[in-house]
Length: 341
Image (tube, rainbow, N blue to C red; front, side, top):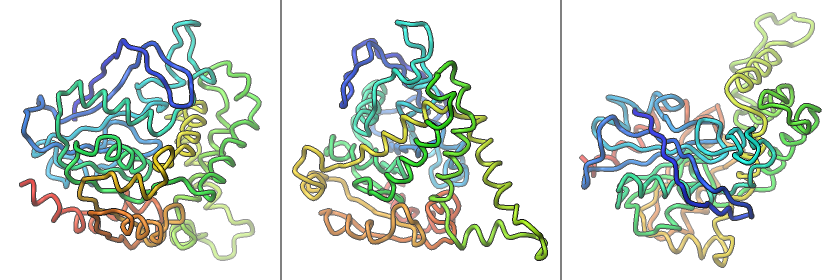
């Protein structure tokens, strides 16, 4: 897919207060130019993903895959606060000539969607045939089909929810505590600061994405007589280092707050009233072992939607099952795509 960057030279007001005088927005599309009338598939990316779904969802997006950018016009826009090119704490503050870091405005899911809509308008897209959001991308997809109810024909909400739960917020706050406990974080001397805090935060998050059975399957000690178990320890540290190598602590801190803003019912008379505004045909997909977004929440969402179906993926890998169980995902989504062939 092809990477693009646009600059919006107009003030952008944030829901929680604060503003930027200009926005930089990065997005990926199919290699060709958009042709009005062709099938558009819009992918909303997950927490630490980026605007190139072939990078973080390679089994699902790519030539000859389920979401083929040669067959459909595929778009994915980078989230605000993510360090991969769109405006974020890693962006340069024109007032200081240095990265914003902790001076960036607090950002909500609705802010992210409003920025994505600016990308849609820039591309001249007046209709989205299918919008899919896995995980935190589902937060965006849910908000979007409420904010622009006539824009999307079909929407897939994959391993996600209409409102952040106290359980998820507890994980988010624990990660923020890890970041803030690193003395380099508050000092905010550079984007490379707080590496230890970020690695620890990622280790915490990973546990919430996986399961008891998943860890026991993949991180079992090779030697039954080992004195101190260490394989899972090594894995957690490895994952922490991977995050440090590709992310920064300030973007991550802001993104955890963005997660905690999720509530489609805020200012709309509650979740049920907000969902009643959706006109798209909806498919809600849960993962049977997902502790962050359990199936009971997905089923409750379907019950509140007017045009919705429910499907479930079976996995021992918990929330991360949407990245792993590709065959099941193709079996669920394949028939949906047939209407666009």
